[in-house]
Amino acid sequence: MKVDKEQVKRHFSKSLDTYDQEAAAQQLIVDHLLSLMPEDYSPGEALEIGCGTGYLTKKLIQNNRDTSWWINDLVDDVREGVGEEINSKGCFRRFLPGDAEQIDFPGNLNLIISASTVQWFHHLDQFITKVHSSLSKNGWFVFSSFGPRNFHELRSIRGGGLEYFPLKELGRMVEASFDVIQIEEDEISLEFDSVRDVLEHLKKTGVNATATKCWTRTEMQEFIHEYESRYKTASGKVTLTYHPIYVVAQKK
Image 1 (cartoon, helix red, strand yellow):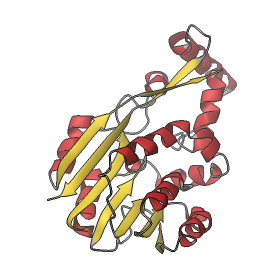
Image 2 (tube, one colour; image 1 turned 90 degrees about the vertical axis):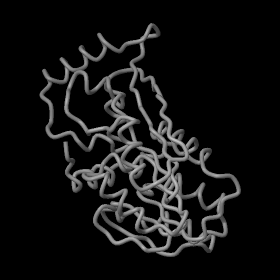
Image 3 (cartoon, one colour; image 1 turned 30 degrees about the vertical axis):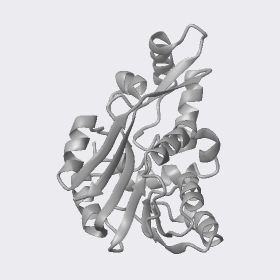
Image 4 (cartoon, helix red, strand yellow; image 1 turned 60 degrees about the vertical axis):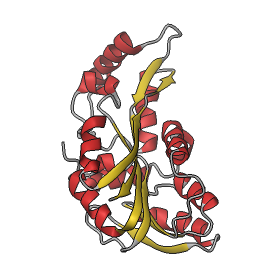
């Protein structure tokens, strides 16, 4: 399904104050993505897509102090906090608000990086072409997305949700314009005390942006019963699975 970007924006805006304390999986994904980057690489001019509350941004600044950073996010409200953090290090070029599929990118960049963002895009193949045209010769495109088992617990009961590309298909899309240096996938299983805690986690991280209606009490009770019957562990907790895919690619 193609998501409503305005709805995504509203959900993430509402989650800004709770995101960092809830986004354990997203933070693990950022840490692993950074571990895949070339060692001692100083990109010079770089762009981050979907900075959010700045967890990746702060680590990028820490590791690349000689880089000038352009920062993008769909939610304009993140500009002040993240922009101040970058500017305090003396390496902030400009905040680029808006939909990364629609806005203009600066040219001749050495690196475009993004974590847990591109799964929201409507035309990922066209976005990859856009990234390619914005990079300098031998520039790097480093990003994470999610695969088909992402939130499989929810999808098996409720259906719907985002269209996630399998690793091989995502790799083929990138290979059309880039040399794929590394591509890999993983699963992160989080445990919660209750199904309601799962739903609260989704709300507090903003990733429930594909939800289209409010449930009745009966629908909620049926959902909770089904979730528990399928995904309750021996310890009495319930699981929620993230399925990250990591890509490190270099412009041909």
